[in-house]
Length: 376
Ligand code: PLP
Image (tube, rainbow, N blue to C red):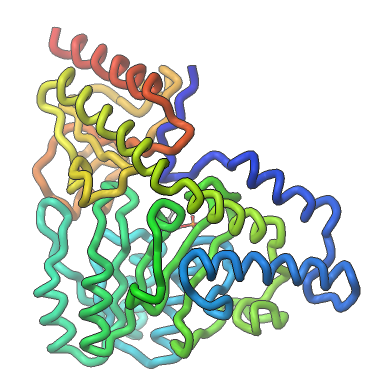
């Protein structure tokens, strides 16, 4: 049996997405910059995809810029704000993805920005009162706070953060890579200037995503060359990827409520069975709290230190991710920042619509067997 429980890393391509993509590899292969029929056909397909995405997130097509994924979208948003708007003060959290953190650390090192980290508690929560103080006491700021954390699943209240940013005239970028395609986003309500997305997190292809940039915010290009994406992102477009991205988002939105319920039930089942069968198990951050975490992610702290659980599960055919703040394994900056005193072995389980209750039960049985052998 092969079980894939690492859907926060990447997801299986949906067959319907694959089917929508293939004609753009085999038949409609024109370059969208060409003025002949083949080119015009390709260009039209890209603009249709842009319109689809804009409609689904209640934005305008000109606010969508196609990128190579989440990393490029995050980098473009942050660098644009700093370079175009000359903002020097940046507020973020220690739990951001490296696509945000490593860029900001680098910019701080170069002396381009002053970086402020919001304090997080042992649950990984930020304090909006602290954010307000920082916004009040510093000059015009860029706030970069993710919607949901990819390791522990914590959800941040981006509606409230957006309101605060608007009150203090700050630019708000939120990394929505783990939530686009899993939650509804309405850019007429959300007060964000930038959001980032990556197709492979919601059953689309790898290497393609988009940046939403609110009209009038100002963008700078990272890549220089051709005039694609209204001069904002040079390079021949990844047409089949863009078609896959739009199709995957459309499919995700069609069944979003049913998937949420189905996947949340799988997560609840894993929480209940682990709690019942493995005394001492705990959950990192707000991972086990339904309305405070991604329904697709469960970060579990298992009370074993002497067993390499990742390898063990791999041998059993179960693919999951690790991450540990203790000395074994590679230290995760997120678990380290939580500093919650958990001393066991952390595993991140992440689910999709393709997982089943039987897979959850098999995985728990495998872990319970380790518990029994350690306890014996
Ligand atoms: N941001 C978050 C929260 C992520 O989980 C990821 C991918 O793991 C990224 C950004 C980077 O996205 P990509 O791999 O598409 O560049």
